[in-house]
Length: 221
Image (cartoon, rainbow, N blue to C red; front, side):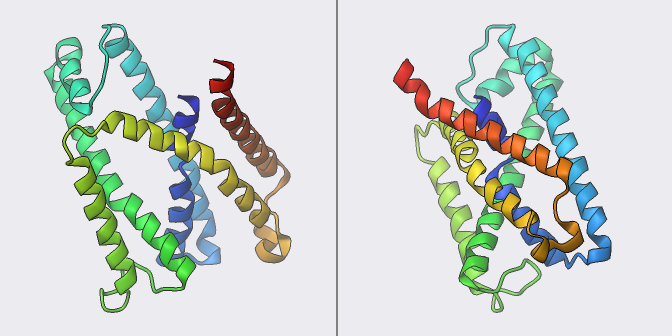
């Protein structure tokens, strides 16, 4: 669960999307500090939101002995415990998260693949200018939409295991990022400082320990 929590909060796709969006927005060096504050404030906000999600679920669902197997179960379970308007709020939040995921996650994949292949990318481009980018983006949305419509799909389990996989993959991506941001020839004055490296290395070390524990735990159980 810890690995999944990290995987969903600092997901690998976010690292690729962040750099691709900054490139596409045409952020200049003199505007770089605004992008940094955007990331810092976003990181703080997502942690606060995640904290209150955990607290709210503990105080309502867990205390009420409610077991959640689907997102529908969570929405229905909140109504008698926390009031019908809270159930509506949960439903709206779920819709918002779904629209976000349906648009941003395929977009980050399309960015990554097309940049790696040297194809034209960007939502400001026309389809004729970036056919591979828009084609891959559309294909991922259709494939994902089709998959979740299959009868009997264990959506909660799929969601959980995908975040565990994110947590397992994340250390490899962060290690490469740390190597890049410490390359002074590449980064110049924007290379990582001492405290940024301490925080980054500590985060990677913790993720590696969690991953090793996750892989080794079935052997001991």
